[in-house]
Amino acid sequence: MFFSKKLKKIKQIKHCFFSRKNGFSKSIYKSLNCGKGSRDNKKNVDRNLNYVAKYMAIEKNKLVLMHQIHSNKVVEIKKDNYRKKITADAIITRMRGIALGVLTADCVPIIIYDFKTNIVGCIHAGWKGAFSDIIHKTIKKIKKINSNNRIYASVGPCIGKKSYEVDNDFYKKFLIKSKNNKIYFSNKNKKKKLFNLRKFVTDKLLKLNVRVDQINRDTFAEKSNFFSYRRSCKLKQKDYGRCISAVRLL
Image 1 (cartoon, rainbow, N blue to C red):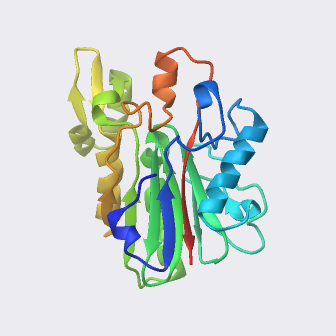
Image 2 (image 1 turned 180 degrees about the horizontal axis):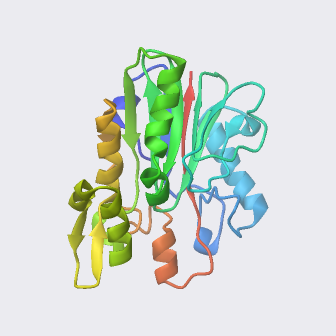
């Protein structure tokens, strides 16, 4: 389990960036795999989600997850939709008695709290979502509810720059959007570059006047702590688990 130093001090919320430990899954999913979309035994995934709900001090059916599609779609969770299937990559809420969760396996989990309006949120920010402005859209949605904000964000465990190898086509895609994006890349060799997803995401938050802290852990490098899509591909595993990060209003 990992915690934001800033968010930990805020008595109005409870949060956690869960590691892959303390769960019930076996083999490549060992052990706290919370990915319903994985090929893991569904009973084990349910037991893992029960463990998370219990830690967050809610019932399992009050743990709200998204069907994540690497989009820029943001949904506000209310009494009329929290039990429905939510297709999105960011969720926010003013509701008490529920927890919001985001699943990741190299992408960036971001937990958000607006001190002024008492809104919490989760963002799933992979490169596609971040590239298509999921972060800006989430903050914009919070500010639309109330423009008087003091927003805090914790950028959770994700793939580190040293582990994130990309090709030149990927690099060019970012440069076409803005030449300023060059700062997020460094050369590995003639064909490959290294991409700093954490900095790319963090800078987007900072430009929106969000106060940011980091759980600066590399999901690819820390095999015992985190699931990693890229590491699973490299090891030629058939599937991979997902870590969960969660937040709720108290």
